[in-house]
Amino acid sequence: MSMLRPDLAVIADHVAPGSRVLDIGCGDGALMAALRDAHGCDARGLEIDPGNVAAAVARGLSVIQGDADVDLAGYPDQSFDYAILSQTLQTARAPDVVLDHLLRIGRRAFVSFPNFAQWRVRVSLLWGGRMPVTRQLPEQWYDTPNIHHVTIDDFRAFLRDRRITVEGAWFLSGDRQRSSAAANLLAQHAIFLLRR
Picture 1 (cartoon, helix red, strand yellow):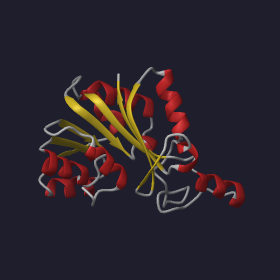
Picture 2 (cartoon, helix red, strand yellow):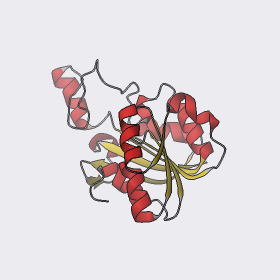
Picture 3 (cartoon, rainbow, N blue to C red):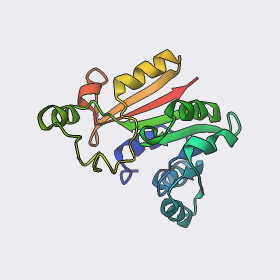
């Protein structure tokens, strides 16, 4: 599991063995392969990029090409133990609708996203007056897939307003976990385990 991106490693460590998993925005299938191989999970994927779909299928994974904004409505209620949306929430046109589908499709949902309130982002805007380009956010403002700049505190408020239960939350700077107390300022990424 250590070869996984840090947020994916956290998710993989908290998925119960033998679970049915839908990974939405699964990329090349790295998480799905780890869940299949190490946990015996029945992992399925939905991915918008045809190159990533081909890479995942080449790993022997069950992945279809699709768009989270439009293709989740066809999945039956409670058809998976976990629905996973990693580093994709901020790219969705309607993230609230995508989250509703996640929590309908899966008994639980993992959501991870970059924290746009992290101190390096704030400093870049304050002192440079420009959108940051970092290892975690490598694209220029005009070329980024990120269309919703969510913060940890924004997401917590969203969950509270919608009465969504948080079963777990992890906050990362690189591959190091941070406490939840100052996560909005210090963490680069957040991972939440949710249920209705």
